[in-house]
Image (cartoon, rainbow, N blue to C red):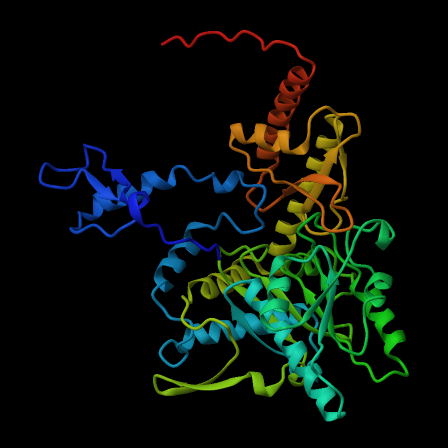
Amino acid sequence: MVLHRHVSGDEATGRLRVRPQFALPAELAEIPRLRMPARGMGPEVAYQVVHDELLLDGNARLNLATFVSTWMDNRADALLLECANKNMIDKDEYPQTAELEHRCVNILADLWHASAAEDATGCSTTGSSEACMLGGMALKWRWRKRREAAGKPADRPNLVMGSNVQVCWEKFCRYWEVEPRLVPVGPSAGGATHLTAESALNHCDENTIGVVAIMGSTYDGAYEPVLEIANALDDECSGRDWDIPIHVDGASGAFVAPFVDPDLVWDFRIPRVASINASGHKFGLVYPGVGWVVWRDATALPEELVFKVDYLGGEMPTFALNFSRPGAQVAAQYYNFLRLGFDGYHRVMSACRETAKWLAHQIYRLGPFELVSDCEGIPAFAFRMKRGVAYSVFDVSDAIRARGWLVPAYPMPPGMEDVAVLRIVVRDDLSRDLAARLIDDLRRVIEHLESRSAGHPEKPRTGFHH
């Protein structure tokens, strides 16, 4: 989470004004901004103060930067409210919530082709970041145990991953003292925007605890070639005393590929894939925050990482970085599984991909843009300015924000940092009609930026007539 500093001195004396129609004569018309008020206020007034403050947030539905779900139906909203006060960690007091978590893990293990003979195991998390941390811990513990059993040093673990990984993996390496081997993308990876089998292999050695392969890069939506990486590792480890498993970071793609790319082999069908994580609150279609992580078998999750906890009268095995959290999102995840079924998820993901492809084509036709990705991964794509265009992706991002759209602009990861792109994520609540409005607004933005860069004066504006 973002860190916030404590403010003191004159800077801490700022005040918030309460709108006069909500502040009765006997009530405060101003409240401290950074300190708790000495007296409380009525719930209606407190609600209005907070409500008005949040008006300055962006519109979540128009936020094309986020992968996180921004819409659920009213029945799901009702379930979320009903379960908001249930503590997910308390399996003894809320056994049916625990049962729904159990069912979700089994649904996902089946969806990702876990073998009935291998006894897959998994759990919910607060999101994919925690799930990645747990997956990384299992990789390190498994590697260290094998090294120690062989009488070899276990003090220099490394983790191989593309430089396009989400920052949670760099956090894992720093917090758990693992060397991050961030493989550059771009020219050094044969022009690929992501990790390849060859580039991964070039960074592996006997101290590699695992390779992270991403199903849906946050930079451009691309799938990394998990099967190719696994085959290359099979060849490299053959005849060596190496065991390098793969963790698939399927934060987005693990909820996309099973429904629209069923023939793509990336999951537990590959023996070298030890664990998979996914975000229920991304293309799992649940509000934040819920994630999932599943290990293919008991050997992939070392027993010493699992705690047997006595909590309010019951013993439970637990593997988590967090403790108390609401059970609401788990209930909402199970609700989605029931309401949509396989066919429903297939329809949603297919529609998202089709809209992404249509939108990418329309953006290309506007003229100044060229596509960086092809929408064949998750429903997200990146595009950049063509050579010779007088304005930048950052200018476009700033200008389109005036219409309420949040379209991020950023440089690509190390190895391609000289390329700056815009990226659009197509979620289930971005309809084709809404996407068409985005194209109209982009067209206006281009006209404005081109006029400005050509030195033309702005067109006179008519007055507003009441």
